[in-house]
Image 1 (cartoon, helix red, strand yellow):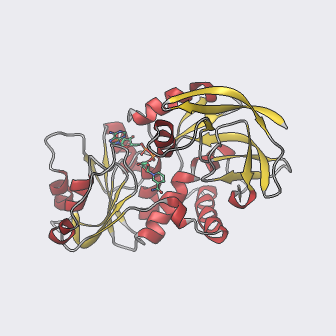
Image 2 (image 1 turned 180 degrees about the horizontal axis):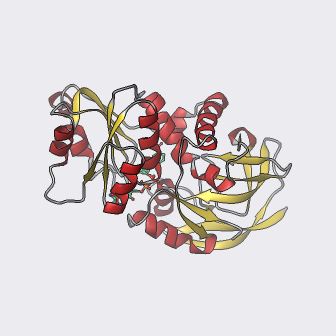
Length: 316
Ligand code: NDP
């Protein structure tokens, strides 16, 4: 038994740093000293009770650190990661390659693996495809822009501030749209950027605020990939709209279904961490917060004030 600081949710939107006991790891677990845990929207949904979790619980779904046997490891999808010491199921751990900082590895577990499955499996982007990417300076957004262009795709990006649009451009977006402009017809702007054709795929993690425009931006038989709801969840939807929008496809994927077994986890993690290691995938850490300042990290994320990835540093 050991004790450690942890970010504990005690009720809807109530959290505090507490000292908790950590049991010795079970036979299928590995104890890890956490260097960094990621900040994600799923934490927000769990904290607010949108995704119900029995309280009290330790927040955080990903991290990276050093195992009790001295190995550098990272993991996605383990609730309870925002703590100094965590027992992680051993089959969720991936090795962090030499040359990749633990913080960077933590930063690409949920968002990097998500961007990877979205461009390789949900809609496998090929040379010449045109993709719409919303919130392109965000955590998932920045990685999507790079992975799409690396596969020969072209990106039409949206972002809410000039600084964010400059980042999207710098990462390879061909056209960048200010979707916070209230006078803008977003779908028309996308059509103008594609000579009237529309995009092959729209990657939409903003949700409620952008869904209609994403649908109207597709080419006939294009695909809308709704992977989140940073602006709120999309309300119930009349399937007939798929017909009038051009016999289009809509899917609502989630990471767990694209990490079905250990081989799939290792394949995706190896490609993402490999691209980080060889410098072809740039990862921006947009903010580092000690556990005691976690509330500020979430306020910044929810308040649209961030770019790239936010991290919690449990031992800072
Ligand atoms: P981001 O870093 O992208 O932050 C969210 C961004 O969304 C903001 O910076 C903002 O960018 C934009 N945004 C637009 N409207 C709002 C609003 N009303 N409130 C807040 N933000 C808004 O976050 P993540 O990269 O962590 O996550 C992006 C999305 O991906 C989320 O919806 C998340 O749930 C989803 N996700 C889905 C997964 C899956 O498997 N399905 C896995 C991981 C994440 P701007 O200022 O440019 O508008």
